Length: 225
Ligand code: 6PG
Image (cartoon, rainbow, N blue to C red; front, side):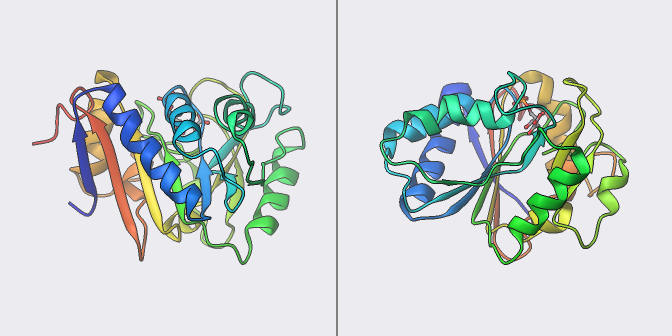
């Protein structure tokens, strides 16, 4: 396997491993990309307790839903409530402006990312195998030059997205997938134990020169041997 697999008992242990990675990176002044969904919130909260000083770090996003930052579907809002608002010293925040058109937000984010090396990206995987907002067999998977692009959703919430491209994710120093729950078992198998396939975008996301780690609980790892 081209991925370092960290298999843990359940969601609490997975949260703890991810939080430790986030806290260490933040303390070291890393550029960190976050994602959305229901899994990362508890890891953000624990990371904020472990390391309340993120003043040397920069926070970015792997993807964003095209809604205003106060919308409950916003990945920025998730990070604000579960992490940024809890810190003693905040990081530099580089949010994707979901209130713009998807194309304008993607262009602005692409420009902001130029010349930046993302050190850590904490990503989730959907039951369909998507990661960030790279959905199965979507045209976004063909992008070779842009770092960020507009994308259409394959799953709820059905709002337009802005996502990092595959080349942008490949240049991240440490790609970390955090995946828990039985409904992810098939996607985890396809992402980590089968050949790379456009039907499973997470199988195409690997750090080119750095590390790729998957933190999976027993239920999500059920189909891995
Ligand atoms: C998003 C995401 C997305 C997410 C997965 C897993 O904005 O929706 O960044 O890629 O990470 O869908 O989500 P869960 O943690 O809810 O399973």
